Length: 174
Image 1 (spheres, rainbow, N blue to C red):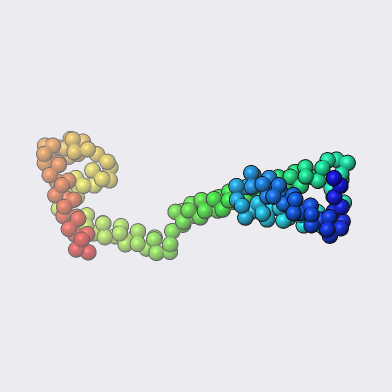
Image 2: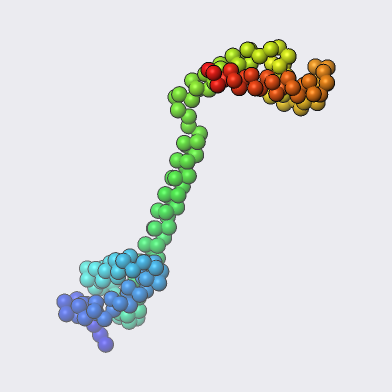
């Protein structure tokens, strides 16, 4: 059966007969009915504009339409995958930027917190301040603090605990 694509009636009959084949071929690739119908429409528009692209010596029109639909569907699928990957990369970059960037207020707030913390530490009695600074400034354990300042273990623990309680109250009051 020879179909004349360059005539309106020949094209119309080919379209009616082969459109479901083109949609099915695209649907298998895209798994999206609307996109598959768009691909089929693109295939037939290309055939309408350039009927000479189809060469009957190379195979049937049925094979040509199915091959073109599959090929265009694969192109569309690859484009969609690339676009989705770009969106994912962009979102990841935005997340990294937002975590790396700090507002103009951050350094001021950090400086203010440090100033309040230093004030709270300055308000502690000397022995408690020393114990807290050894524990949190130097990372010493209670046993190491006791050895470093020459007091019993229980005393070192009490000084750290009492110093933290007083510093916490001072910070809450500020």
